[in-house]
Amino acid sequence: QVQLVESGGGLVQAGQSLRLSCVISGRTFNVNSMGWHRQAPGKQRELVASIGKTGNTRYSNSVKGRFTISTDSAKNTTYLQMNNLKPEDTAIYYCLAASKLGPQDDHWGQGTQVTVSS
Image 1: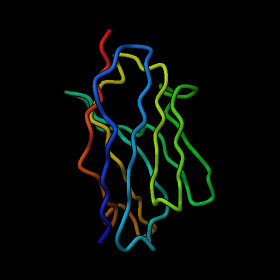
Image 2: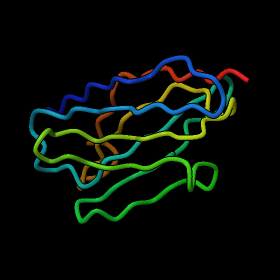
Image 3: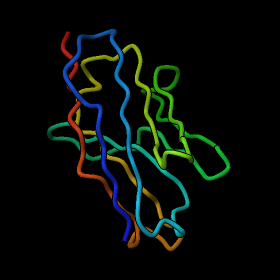
Image 4: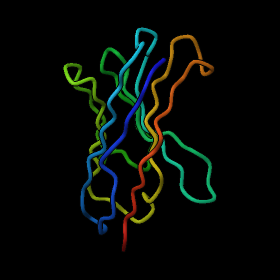
């Protein structure tokens, strides 16, 4: 099993920054990539950013240039640096450990709330 523990969410004003952290532990040998998704009230969960084992990254258009995903292998941690936050970034942010075996083997964190006030 894979365990994911997220932290770093909170309430900030528009224009401010937050950094989310996701610590991974357990049987991680099938993890192919790490990602951050978010779900706002009444909306579907959407991809925010992902990073592969080779360091290749992908971002949604809405966060490009403002958010940066990174990993620290020594700390088993994936980060999401969020700058210039906007009210529309308000959502629950979930960490995803995507498995090379397919979605049925993916693991999700419990989620962390990010609220951006105008």
